Image 1: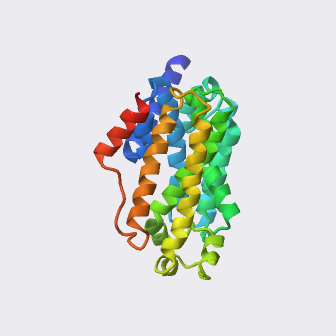
Image 2: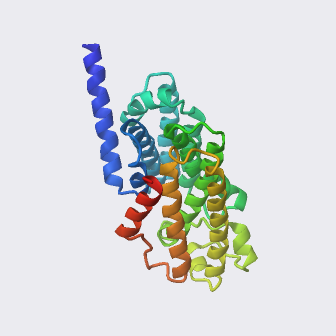
Length: 287
């Protein structure tokens, strides 16, 4: 009876994970479809965890309430590593953390990053704060993912960190309008000051004449991080790192399109066409 109950709970846990993944519509997921099923499912469970804590950070609740929910997830991660998870996504993660030696510190780092995001005054962080934020919300995902991919070369962690920074900076540049609507401004203080912008109000910054120069400077940092990822990835197995390569080239293409559009036209969405997505998967995920 106990085994049957555990089996039922595990099926329900995975059904929950698949529901979260299917509802996301994220381009991250398409890059993972080149993985074998066991590894892909592990990535999906990690993604479900990320999605759930990200939803907490984005919720229009007072910070104190969001903080309480994130604390509950910290406690859940502790329970997970003691073999006693209670939440559906944590139950689904139980086997992957053992099979792929996923580190508790990386899950905790993700929660730390979402805690930064949940705060109402996250505007114009210093460059150091921004890089810490990116390391937590994106680099930590990479550190978990490269272990699931099966890569053994220590350079895998360099890929995770540099690619995490590049992807998150691209997200910030792509979503600058949406973030401003939520009162968020991720553009770093040093770049604002460099271009003579002394305000931190998102709307005023976005309408400032120097917005293109500020965003192009941040895009330069993202592009360097993409290049660092390429160099680190060259020391890893091409086959093992195919999902990372798909993500890297997909987001690099988005960054190029953002540059071509410019940031004075931030209401114009930038997306890859279906053909571009298919070509990237075939070019970097199959051959």
